[in-house]
Length: 111
Length: 114
Image 1 (tube, each protein chain N blue to C red):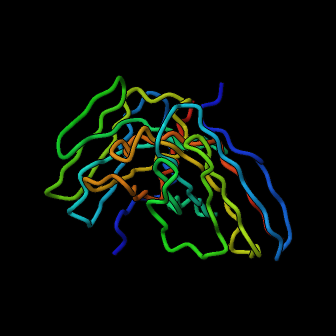
Image 2: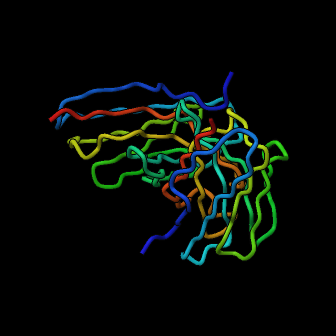
C-alpha cells in the first residue's frame, strides 16, 4: 500500500460548483497535512496546511483532516476557471524533514 | 523578483553526458530541497540541505551530486545521464527544517535525455 493515495482525475466540474478533493494515507505518524496547487508548467505552491486533526478555512478553501480514518479533504467553494490546476496533497511527520506527496488530482473548472 | 529561481529552464542532452542545474533563493531561508517530478506528475524528494549541510539523501543514485556553496544556493550535478533521468526537477526552500510544511518551489527544470 502506498503511503499516500490520491485519485489522479481528471475531475471536471462547472463553474460555481463545490469541489471535493481527497487523499488517504497509511502512516499514522503523519501530523502535518498540506495542499499544494500546481498550474501547468509551474512549480507547486502551498495553499493550506493543517496540523493534526480538524478543519481550516481560508476564503473559498476548506481543508479537513480525519486522522481516525486517515483521510484528508480539500473543498473549494464557488469554483472559478482560475482554480483549474493540479492539486497535490502532502503529508509529513512531526520532524517535517521529508514531505510525502500524493500524485495530484487534475481539476478542470468549466466556464 | 523571483523567490526561488532555477537555471536552465529547459535542458536537452544525450545519454552519457554530464549536466548541472542551479538553484537560488532570495527568501533568506535555511533549508533547500531538490525534487524530481516524473512523467506521471509524481513529485518525490531527492535531497534536502539545511545551512549547507546534507540532511536527506533519498536513495538517489550517486550519479546525482548536490552542492550547496552557501545557504542561498543549491546546485545539482548529474553524471552519465540516462534516459530514465528525463523529468522535471524542482528546487524548493523553507524557512527552516521545522517549517518544512511550507515550501516555496522554483519554476522547474525540464530535463530531456535522448
